[in-house]
Structure formats: structure tokens, C-alpha cells
Length: 323
Image 1 (cartoon, rainbow, N blue to C red):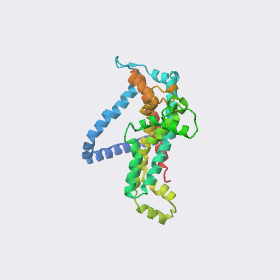
Image 2 (cartoon, rainbow, N blue to C red; image 1 turned 90 degrees about the vertical axis):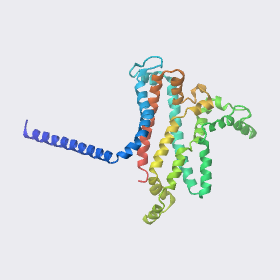
Image 3 (spheres, rainbow, N blue to C red; image 1 turned 90 degrees about the horizontal axis):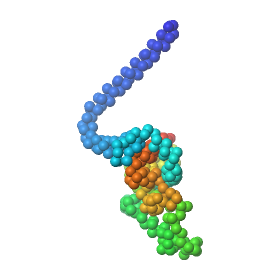
Image 4 (cartoon, rainbow, N blue to C red; image 1 turned 180 degrees about the vertical axis):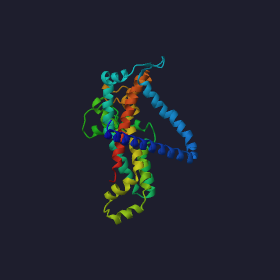
């Protein structure tokens, strides 16, 4: 071993030692902060325990079961990646469901997010009493889980359906359209109803965030050269609302990917030609009807990974807000 090699090895050892020392110091600092704030951790413990038992643990168990064949009558049988191979290569209905879900998520997710923020921004400018009334009006559709059943009457396939009655009175159509039995109308109707339901918790979060923006920042911004409302929105309002924007994004993404009951109620199960079939419907089919829980867990894991990936992508976009 020559002198150069010895020097390189010594440098590597020094770097490794520094890394280990830094980690140890960070661990000591973290442990010190935990001990210092132990009262708060004691108060959080019951909620964290419930969160672990009813959220984290079921997700982990579902991931483990996705590698097994499990029918609830026999012990789980480990099959490795057979469920995933079947899912992507042999299950044509799943691919249709995945395509429908992605279309719904790509359209209803961003559109409903923008609509929720725009309506919240406009309502925030109104006087207090009118603002409260308008907030209730826009939030009302999401108050009841069965509120969307009114669309069954609107898109009824006979002459008594509101859509058919108005179109026939205007002379646009001569005979009733079977809206909910025609595969061509399934996704457009599903998108329309989902957008109508989308002003939910995220909408309220946006209004709360707009109310909490420090008004003195607008005066400071005017001094620094901000000239119009759009610049105020981009450089002051949105950066101050990052937590609410992230919360709203998570809620809208989750809602867009989790469309299931809406499709089943409007179009029945299964829908005609699986035109309104979503991943949640497919999951319910194998989990609640066929009791193939291993395969259903694989479907749930794929959906979970899609949601995680989308949330990470949205987080990166929101970091750039106001820059």
C-alpha cells in the first residue's frame, strides 16, 4: 500500500467518523427534546395509539396480505407477486377501472381544487353575514352522503327526468335518452356529479386560510411594489395559506381516487360495459362480494401507491407557490 492510498483511507475514516458523530449528536438532541416535551407526548399517546391501530396497522396488514391468497375461511397462503401479475396482466376489468379512475382523478381533482379555491376567494370578499350564507350554500351538497341521489331524478331515462323533459321541451331531442344506461354518458355524468360534490372540507379550509392571512402583509406588499390583486394573491395570500392548500389538495386527491359509492348508486353494479367502474368498485367486488381478500389487498395497495405518488407530486408543486 503506497502513501496516497493510506491518505485516502485516512480521509474516508475521518469522514465516516464525522458522519457517525453528527448522527449521534442529532440523536442526543432529539432524545433531549423528547424528554423536555414529554408531557406533550403523553397527551398525544392515546391518539397516536388509535391512529396506529386503526390506520397504520391495517395498511401494513393489507400490504402483507397482498402477497397471499386469503379467502377468510383458510389461513393465508403466500403466493409472492402472483396477485399483482394477475392484476396487471390477466384482469381486463381492473385495467378499465384503473383507466376510469385516472380519468376521473385527472379531471375532477385539479378542477374541483381550483373551483374550491376560486369560490372561497370570491366569498371571502363578501360581508360577514352574506359570506356565512354563501359558504353554507356551497358546502350544502357535501353535508349529506346521499345528496347526489337527486341526480337520479335529473338523469332519469323517462320523460319525467328533468334533463329529458327540458331537452324535449326545447326541441333538441324527440325521445328520452337513457342517460344512466348508455356507456357514452357514464364518465361525463360521473365527472359532473363529482364536481358538484367537491366543495367540501377543502373548501372550508380555504375560507379559514383566507380569513387568517395577516392583513398588514398587504400594506407591506404595496410598499414593496405589489401593484394588483393577482400579485397579492401569488406573493402574499398563497404563501400564507400553504398548510390549507396542502390539506385541500390531499382531500381533493383522496376524493377523486375514492369514487365508488357514487358510481354504484348512479349506474348500478356493475355499470353497463363497466363504463363507470372504478378501482374502488373493483376493490369492493373482490373484498366484500367474492371474499378474495389477498387479491383485494393488492388492489388497495396499488391505489394507495397511486395516492402517495400524487400527493408527493402536489407537494413539490405547492412548494413553488409564491416563488
